[in-house]
Length: 297
Image 1 (cartoon, helix red, strand yellow):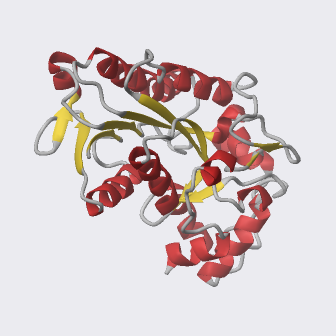
Image 2 (image 1 turned 135 degrees about the horizontal axis):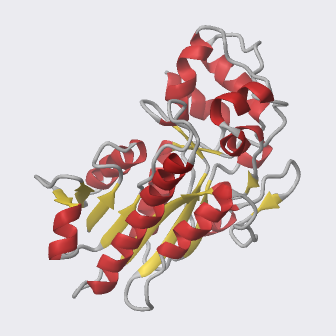
Image 3 (image 1 turned 90 degrees about the horizontal axis):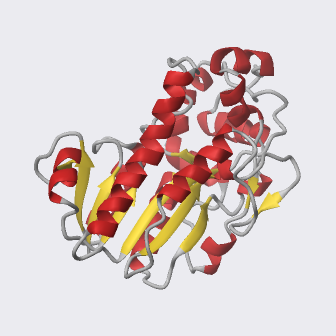
């Protein structure tokens, strides 16, 4: 299988893991990036020449919403939206215009589609998408992925917090926890929907290789609904052999990230990977403790 992946110019955290997995399974991978080159196609070439012939296209692009060095304002909001919605529209149009469309089109979005709740559990069939900035963003993102009916099957993977070495959430938390400065955020009771990076890459590969799969799949661990922020904090500290005694008050989170972004840290969703499990995907790391031990080993 030949696959075209857009994931931040070849440097994306999930994109690297997916590329490695696909290549290990004998698939050819071409990246969409700002500049072309070996095994790459630039956005300019994509617009001018169209989509290269391929069996599948995957979009993993997206500006880091929780970048603490970026102030939350109109300019950054536009970047967040453009990096997801506009790139998805461009690729969807390239697929629709292709003389030989790919067999599969996979877009990774987020569980922010579902309304935060300490009690409600959400499956792929649950409603959402129209109550705050992030739910509306995911709705627009997924709408941008729609293509006319034809030979290309569409797959949406709504991902939780991606845990893995060398990037993502762990890279931002590692040093504070090593220094004994880690602790629960806010009340600590909020759900913490998570997935190991090997499983997110695995779900995408599973969707690419199984031609009967289409529609929405939740990219979260089966034990994710039972995981709170406090549980994650305790397990992460235990994996590192460090204490986790310093809670981060809600007011400090809002001061650093702004009120809208703080929702992502102070609230959460209990998300169940119902259709993902029904599709036959077997999780490598269904358990949080084992996942974290693998990551910090």
